[in-house]
Length: 267
Image (cartoon, rainbow, N blue to C red; front, top):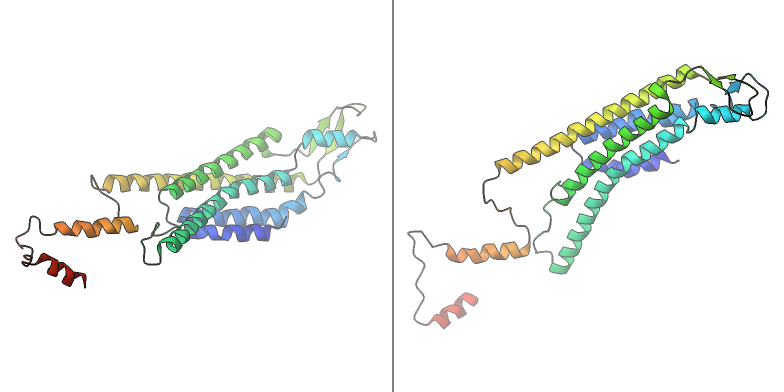
């Protein structure tokens, strides 16, 4: 798999992430993707070839290996890394959709019109919910894969010797796993980094929710958000007709010929 292209796709996520999101992305690439590409694939490259059983019965080693390794660590980690980073791409796609919508609006209404979004990448409205959903989804994916790993390999530890009595083995045979200590070290490392990523997602989620709650509580009652569209600006101009209400300054009197006044002001 071309992990370089995968990294290039996610590099734009930094622009729309919080500080916790940037730390999470750095942790994923440095301690998960890089470790997976450089070391994990090589450690597990010979797991089937070096899985030896003390019998010469044909097919016994294959069925025993399938029993104790139903899914390879490497393939599970690859699937986990792909799924856990996909929600970040949703955020980038949402921002791209906002930019395209803003471009169409300006082309239709002209360059001098109001803007739909002051900042398309700012986490407001639907983009805020997309970002929150991505955090929940990423944490859920990591938790799910940790449970799957634990169900396949209890306590995430590989024993050096396993006993197998499946057919066509003639009796209970001993099978030996290649480099169990090295594999256990990398397995524990990947599990720990996944737990840290889950904690970062939860911290970032708490930060976003608390920040939104503070903004809601700090906003005055009846506060109307700033308008950025042309219709809002037109309403602001129309409201200027009431500028003299409640003030000591009186509006200028119209001349006797109001039509002449209208012509002059129109010019």
